[in-house]
Length: 301
Image (tube, rainbow, N blue to C red; front, side, top):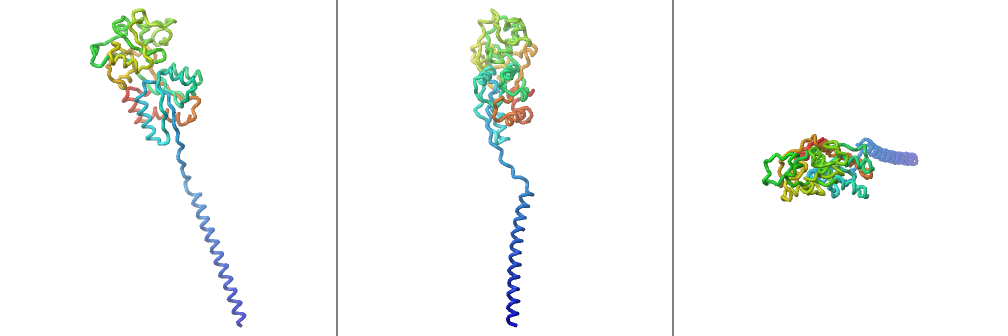
């Protein structure tokens, strides 16, 4: 009898141990299954966006507006910052790209300079779009003796005033020469005038030539008028906003020169082409950004 009870007790003990082992395995399996299920069911954890720094080459007239727009973009897109943006005459920007300098985005102040960038392979033509529009105006020193006068192209061509315009690398200077060609103040080699002219490769009339001062940047041109070095200057409306110190005395008729537009494109060698294209698209579509362009005298295209 004792042997039977001992055998039964041993069997019960073995059964209990086995049950506990099975329960432990089942528990571990349940835990593992629960863990696996959580991983499978959870939404993928979003990885932080890779930080990107964009290098922008932009026309000189965009200096203040672009800096403000970039600050807003970084605020809205913390993963994107901007290197020291290069502001130069549009022709100079192309020369910089041609010399091997790196940029992700190019924004020029004329269709012609962007055409040249496309032709030379500096930008991806498929990303090109017109961003802004501008007007050409005649300005004089703020509070100066010419304020309030309506100065016409004919007055300028007649030699009534000393004048500052941009040189051939400055689109504002090209537009000014195109406009002056309609009244004989600028002569192109092929005789074309107005919107048909390039504003390059010609010369000012004998009357106007001694009265003209050329500037390497449209901002310099504006400064010549502000300081009184010249009576008047031909610049963009946006330059009046960003430079100050001058007043508009007349708006140059739009049909005397090519349409003033600012094309932008992603540079062909950009290492961040997707981020660069997104920035250009934002420049055109973001409502808060639109207020910045308007504040500085630009119209969205």
